[in-house]
Image (cartoon, rainbow, N blue to C red; front, side, top):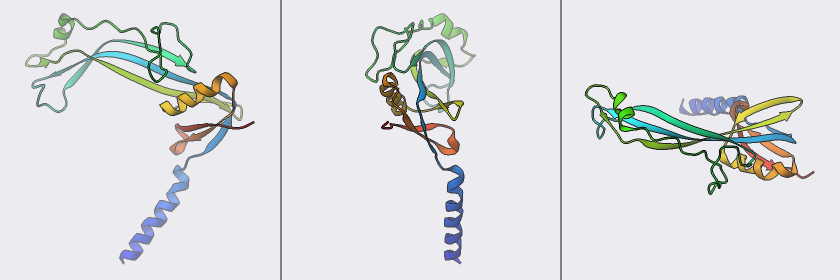
Length: 171
């Protein structure tokens, strides 16, 4: 009986693989973007040290959109160690702003500056334009290939809803 259950489980997994498998495509028209953002956030809670899920309030934010590694308007003077350009810092919330959002019986934490990056790749294949989320490694491959317009082979993720890998293709 256990062997039959194991065999059924294996068949189910093997049958499901084609439904969620990844596909590959080659494109010569592509653009990678990285939206870099700073955001000030403050945690609020009745007990900041023991409450596992404090309420988080967001304050000022600033962002710049990196395109293919080129310096965007409004970016700081130099890119960071990963080649990403960042916006100028948004203003830190004042104590008055922090206290205005505090509810009765709550404590307010210190303002914390959060950094986020959202990577995307846009590409044209078979006459159709697509934009999908991606990761830092794909972004860097596109940045390196972009000036020469080297064709890229893209590996799409599960259900073709993301780009997991980009590799240069020899012409």
